[in-house]
Length: 140
Image (cartoon, rainbow, N blue to C red; front, side, top):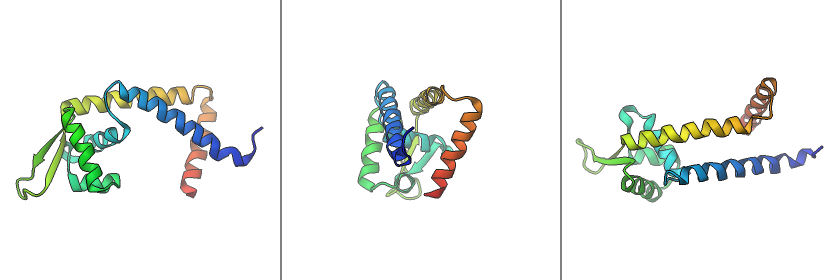
């Protein structure tokens, strides 16, 4: 049995494997995890759009980082940059139908990845696992 101090390493190994699998799946769609996070946020936004400033705050990134992510998503056709009718200094970012489809595909992959992650656990073990994960998260 592994020692309790190995817990952090196990969590890191699981995280690394999940990230590797996610990045491999997203590579097929020509998108990164950071870009996907923007698309997910936009897909859940009122009218499917936020201002660039709102996205910076939601993602906790610098203006230049947000602008770079949005620029690459625009080039790929996943978002459209719109001017704000009331204030031309404000740039609105709206998800396109291609962006919505990308999110749908990514979320489908996430469900499959989670099924694989939990495949060796019984239903009771899954319930305990979720409870313990939440307890650890809430203690941070």
